[in-house]
Image (spheres, rainbow, N blue to C red):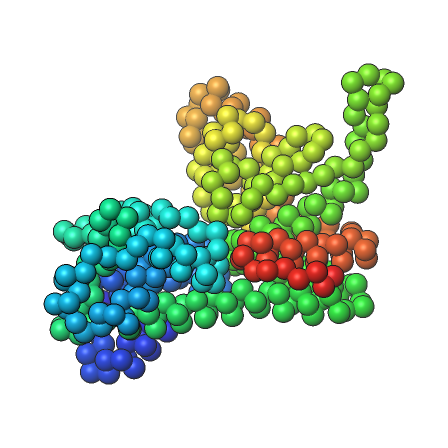
Length: 362
């Protein structure tokens, strides 16, 4: 069985030089961790799974000091208190806002989905107390708890390094005095293989500053009409269950959804979620908006199979297509002060996304 994450393989070789592959092949816990740690890659589109990983780690953290290589003693143990574990993993990197779902059910449900032949839950739950089933802690008579802790700690180290890379870039941009170079560096981050959350945050910052230059006129009567600038608001974190709305515009009431180009079924699902209210799609692609619209139209035709009501429902719900091409052009069009504001917005929202404490150094 292939170990896909190199850092996991290195740790296993270090701990079990002669038997590392056999240990991995016979450990569902190690295989589960390997499957859940793809977010260390620069172009990862997967979730970080911190809640699930920290639920496991919080139990292992206390276990390795109290029960390592003591199977009979552990079999008599009733589990760790829920509050102890929750408070611990909320102190970990990116864990301050995590909920209790992973401890209560999510890990076990996902574990059984990935390993359909298992008979025991990974996390044993008993009246607010939690422990890992002993079946997953021993492989070939080895207690693998310390190895699992090393793997999780290395994963977090790699995530932290990856997260702070963008912050370093932003700090470097802040110091530049050549605004043409600032614009170019921002646009260099807008690539088709950019991480989803970074693309969404940068897209938001560009669109927020772009639309702030556009004025509209609103009023309940001719006497009350007033001039207003368009304002764009971000609805929450990139992984939030927001019903298909990533950004909302005032005062005109537009919805924006950030997405990939490769799954048009998801576009229609997003439209369905908001009951066919028009959506502007911000798409991580270098294809032209005309090309995307053509492909999307073909997909709608395929789904509708000639049914006019279905064709109309989806076509009228596509308000606008925005691609990397438009985002880059609008970046070049912004004034110098707006570029600084945009860099500041990226910094603020990225730190919020990653649960990194923001410093008022702008």
